[in-house]
Image (cartoon, rainbow, N blue to C red):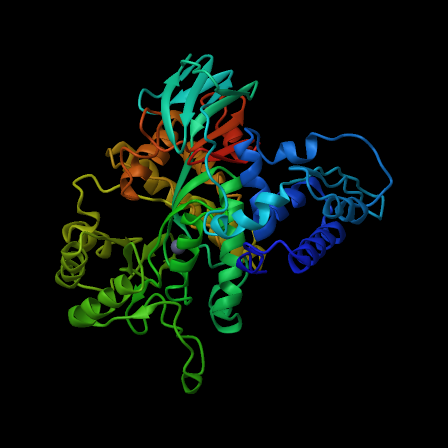
Length: 515
Ligand SMILES: [Zn+2]
């Protein structure tokens, strides 16, 4: 619906619109979580969320405030609310599911006098941090840089930033205290390798069978799932054939129109014809498009890079190796671009202050990438992406294929241990998309399984992740001046890293998305 259509005209049309939206929610909501989603997604109801935050409570309060049972329907209350003009607040609803399998209670506040005037303003920014300070209190807090747990833990948030974090913080006048109980507070997780535009199932067929608008909707849902799983920042390593559609997703998140992580995006990855992403297994007469943008040689790299930056990419993703093969315990992968070609790409990105990330799984391509100055850092973090390898091995087409993929995962884990022993810095990237979004905290569990300590895995995620995404000093720790990207997990992640897969609280930029 268009929120602008309601702006500044308190008449019958917006009332009808409000009623029809309430009706839709009444018929579609099956759980409390769905209600929250509806509140967050529906342009009209996002406004309620903003109102609730102005009042100092989050949208959970919207339905928890009223636990009184009633057999009357949402429609009844909606009508009443709309009829009783004059008061500032309208009491709207308790939502009862007609199937009686589930029931849930909703209480929505509507300030109709303000509604039609404010809707237009708020439709560009659906959720805002609270105006007042918030103190998060928990049993523990993880100090990322020191690599230790502090007890108890408190974080003072004002607007979108952290003011103070530690065992105890000042409680300014007017501050709202959220006691989260027996949990550990951590900086929001960072996934340095995601594909928002992919879902489980054949990757190349998604490009062929699904329209870009359809895939963009998929991407917005994936962004929400990742955020609710605790990933407050992500680097999207290629839309896999959806071009620069990720620009729209990133911008909508930044404008507060949809929930999602802070994003660094790359548009399509870049590959050579007939290379890692060359759409090579199809009838050539069908001219099947690649998942990647083609660039053969230095001149074409420059052309494609300029086009991608024009369309909104934050960085460039290049396939340097592939396709991989693993036979008789030996791994091999051809390189795609020479060191000189990669250097041209890095220089072109650097010309406008941007960077290049490469997909590089083996030699000599990895060496070429390192020498060409990819990421322009002395200490280039490796991103092992175990979670996707485990998922593919566990979901292989046949037992034989599964066994071979598990063997390859073991080989990968052995290489990882050698890299750790050699002091190669790591960052956390799951390659999520081909496996379900919101489940990728498994990557940290696997990095610990294959040789890292939980502290080292969390530091790799948060400190190196912040560097890789170009937000060093802004994210990846609970420190004064940093973005208030804060999550909570039950238990102690240093004793048991698996709790990282059970995120129970998510705040991003001072806005609570999960509680
Ligand atoms: Zn990937």
